[in-house]
Length: 100
Image (cartoon, rainbow, N blue to C red; front, top):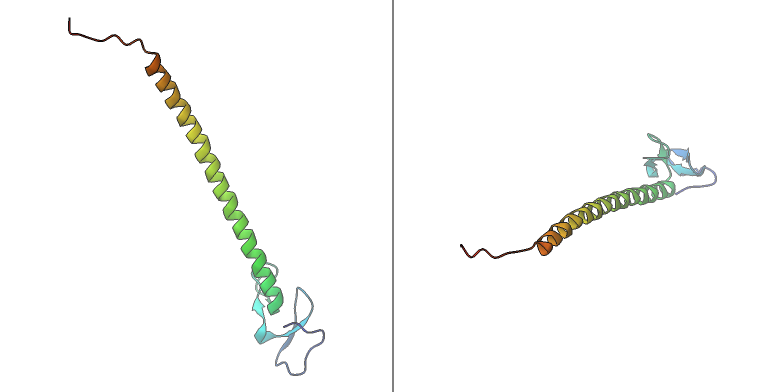
C-alpha cells in the first residue's frame, strides 16, 4: 500500500519508483516492465501486471488473426483450383466407349 509520507511503523520504508508513494519494502513487488529489477508498491505492480496481460492478449489476437488470414488466403486459392478442375470436368465432351 502506498503512503504519502513514510509510516514510522514500516520496517523498511521505500518510495515507489512509479507513483512516488511510500511502502514497506516487504510489501512491494518486483517490476517486470516499467522498472526491471526494482521493487515497486503493490498497487503499481497490480496495474503493471494488468498492462502486461492486456499486451499479451493483444499479441495473441494479432497472431490468431494473421493465422486466420493465411488460412483464408490458401483456402481461396485451393477453392479456385478445384472450381477450375470441376469446370474442366463438366465441360469435357464425354463420348462413351462401347469397346468397338
